[in-house]
Length: 570
Image (cartoon, rainbow, N blue to C red):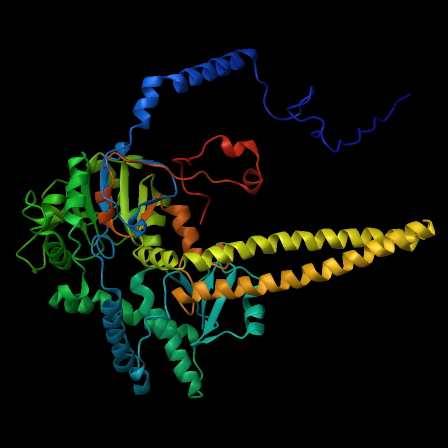
């Protein structure tokens, strides 16, 4: 005779039977007495450490005062990084070492591209009269080439804002196209506006659609985008844009007096530096002379800062393809370099073009986590290097300074918004609780199995709960409306069309999520390293899951993050 054992009822207070805390663990680990002895000794050592009077005195002495810099100039940390372990630091040039005057460069690129569309692509002359709106575009948007829309997404790929031409997309169309699907940027239907150089193309796309459709013309959105993309590529590829910039570098490029000292400080800390740029030698030389020559007495020429100089690197192909390094013979300022031949090794003082990651690591003797690369392009500089190597990464996002400065000025409004949102959360819980109580009373009254006196008491309690529920529901609607209004004001005060760069609604924006995922560090400019030690240990806050934020003790295991690889796959 056999018996079928019945599982015991679950306890309302205890753990599920079979957990590691019960006598018959089914999962978890077994802790031996040997391990426990080590742990108990470690606890005694910790107590001796904290009881050390001299150590306590040393830790209580404040550090020597350092120069205070605005919070917007901080270096922000996604993954712990020990600069003491970094031997080689590389830099992109455009929008990294060289910070451009965005509005002037965008306008120049816009004007030159628009002229090509009219003169070479056959667009009507009226298109050439379009005026560029700097406020309408920002980094981190996506172009829907199939439907002619410009989108902003949150970290989950959910479309929070969409514009067709220069008008918000009608809500019904927005729901039809994007409500039930996630935008996958790998789909050729979409184009990712991920660099500052790409902002004019986003405006041209929306501006031309708005103009031509207002004139009753049908627009082939995919062809329009491809024409714009090709025209902008031509402006960059034939160097016509950079020739104009070189004519007046002071108009288009900011000089940062702290850049030279920052690079010098890194070198003085034992770091070797390299330049890895997609720009050609003649343009690179002109810009770098303007930025660095004469800044620090120890460096007569900008080239003295760098152990290796690589131009026309063709990133992101540099990180994934096997193009050879070509040695260049450089001439005077502003003159093009001549290719001598394929380089068999890399040495200080010589300029190269092309190249690849594998050969670079082999010939410099530096690889993996001892290399830190600093760039502004989330795909070409940060994501691709992180995917192809173990290099550490730092992303330059110059817009951080604007966003932090702006939100600091909105502090009181943001604090009030936070108070209202917390109140809304409490109100939501109270509404749910009162509805549950009312449902319970209704079921009891419907059964009719209670005495008259008890029925009268329950009816009175029911009336009281309904009054309270009506009050709570009103307050919830009011708090929701207030919160939505304040949030809209804060976001649209930064950008009336797209809101904050790093946020979309209550979530990080797609752009913010990629910065967090792939950049070990991020900051607004390279010269921010001047205010940190070359041996700095950059510590990130530890990621907490909701159950840890709710009080789980695993949240206390470590207050700082890890030095591990990026979070997940793209």
